[in-house]
Structure formats: structure tokens, C-alpha cells
Image (cartoon, rainbow over all chains, first blue to last red; front, top):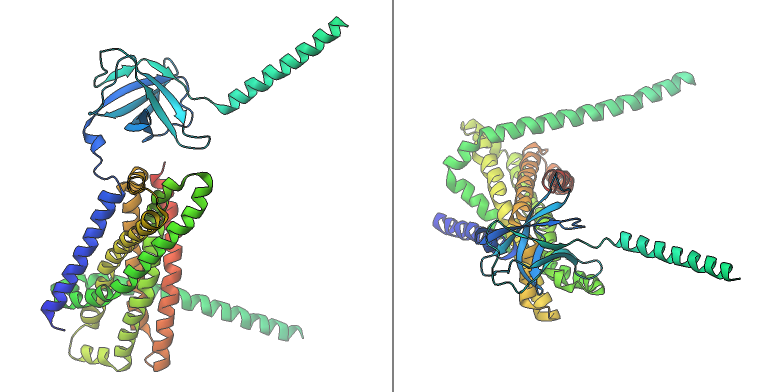
Length: 163
Length: 270
């Protein structure tokens, strides 16, 4: 095999490798994520964010419209402040309610946006005032058990007192 | 009686000591050999046609096996993964499962193992046979450094070819998974790709795979050229050197993979 053929084949080989990396970067990984460059940031404070993580999706009516960019604890109010990046194509009214939801019982945690009726929209650096915290299942269960226990003993004592 | 036991014990200890010393000196020899190959790097790139020829032999000729096994690994992964995921109603995540396992683990590791047995063994056999037929000595007589003329181009050819093969393996694996998941099982195309894109990051997921493949390329190529250069100049010596190349590089790939995964797990996922 002469030199130019080898050079040509090696060139094709390396080009194919570069194409594979580009394929992995663009089609598989989101190297060029459009929502990173074109989007506006909004803050929302929650009492409890549960299992919310960075890059968790933000959905309105089930459609992903943005992602969680930063999470921090406000040292004064002890609330979790979540920074959300929302796609420029979508505008939300100022009375939008942000709530932390879970898809299914074991699914991923996301922020759901329920749009209100106000005509003013939230702009870059704005704040979502109305929020609803994550539901912590342990708390729910313990509350339920406590209520049940107290109602049971309450009934017992009432029946006893009646006798 | 006691005398004899003592003698047996000392003989045993001497064997242990001898084996450890031989192992350590071999490791030292490997390190010095590695340094010598690195020092001869300019020779490999000044005479580019030599390195090109090696990329052709180790890379281009390995394409068939890499592409075909990549396709099949991806297809099997999609079938098996779908079986489990569908139990939890998470069959939409099949794309993430396949893309992450291929780009982070299976791509570099399986293509590394294939590369070791397809190209590494060939390099060892070639250099070993050159040594046996005294071609290396002849070069030295002509004041041509075999490290620069024979070893460095083969080493760098392998180091360059390995990441390319690994990337192709991952890409074709994902294509295979696409064929099975979308065309055969009937997962929605959009869901397949969009979930994959949402779950896989270029940095660190895919770059970690590339780093791994570069490290494996260095390890396999180094072991292959070293075993060939160090082979006993007999037919039997070459055959056992070839076997050692495959065994040692496979073990090195698996051990390095674990170490790299621990480092990446600790360093990048916090």
C-alpha cells in the first residue's frame, strides 16, 4: 500500500473519530444547550425544597420551560432560594405559583409553574412570590399517625367517660 | 530435622525475595523504557509516515471489529435495559441508560479490551519477531535507534488510534440502541433523544470517557511495545510475550478503569 493511500485512510479514520465526538457532544450530551444562552433568571424562595437538585427541570403544564441554575440558603429567613433559568420564548405572569412536585411516587423532582391571570409578566432578575414547598412524605406520615393516635385515644377516653 | 525445616524455610523465603526483586526491577525497567519512548517522541512525529502507517494498522484496520461490536453492544444494552426499565414505567429513560453506560464505561473499556487483543498483540508479535530475527540489532549496527524507528511510532500510533476507536464505539453503540429502542420496540424517537440530551452532559460525562480512553491507549500501547521489546528472542518467547500483552493490558484496563472512576466520582460529581 503506498503512502498517499495510507494518509487518506488515516485522515478518514481520524475525521470519523472527530465526527463521533461531535455526535456525542451535540446529539447525546447537551453541550450547546440553547436554554443556557437564551433565557432569563428568576428567583423563588421555598421553605423546603425536598429533593430538588441543580439542573432539575422547570415545567409549566408538563412542558419543560427551564432549569434550576442555583440553590442557596437565605441566611436571614432560612428559606431556600432557587434560581431558575427560563427560556425566552415563555413569559409568566407575576402571580405565577411555583411548587415543588415529584413525577410519580419515585420520579424526579421538578418545579411546576401554575400560571395566574395577571397581565404583568416576570422579567429577568424577578421573583416568584407565591411558592409551595415540597411535600415531605415522612412528615405527612408522622402527622397522619399522630392524628390517628390522638383520635383513637380521644375516642377511648370519651367512651370510657360515657360509661 | 530442625535443620532441614530451617533450610526449607530459607529456600522458600529466598524464592519469595527473588520473585519480588525480579518484579520490582521489571517495573523499574518498564518505567525507564516509558521514559525512553517519551524522549523519542520527536522521532515519531518528525518521521510522520511511520506513525501514519501505525495508525493505519492499529486504528483503521480495527474499525470493523469496533463498529460491529459497538452496534451489537448498544443493541443488547437497549433490549436488556428496556426489560428492566419497563417494570418501573421508566422505559422513556432507555436513552439515558444506554448513552451514559456507553460513553462513561463500556465505550472506553470494551474498545480498550478489543484494541489490546486486536492491535496490542500484533504490535508485540511484530517487535518480538524483529528482535528474534535480529532486525533490531541490525538497526543498532547501522546507528539507527530502534526506539526511535520502531517503538516510538507504534506507541504513538496506538495512543492516537485508541480515543478515536472509543468514540466510534460509543457513537455506534448509541446508534444500535436507537435502532432497537425506536425501530424495533417502538419507543418514541423524540423522547429517546430528548431524554438522552437532558440526562447526559458533555462535561463531565463524555469528557470522562475520552480521558479514560486516552489513558487506556497509553497503557495498552506501552505494554504492547514493552513486551515485544523485552521478549525472549525465541519462537516460544514471542508467543508468551504476546499472551502476556493481552493478559496484562486487559488487567491494566480494568484496574485503571476502577481507579479513574473513583477519582472522577470523588472529584467531579460533588
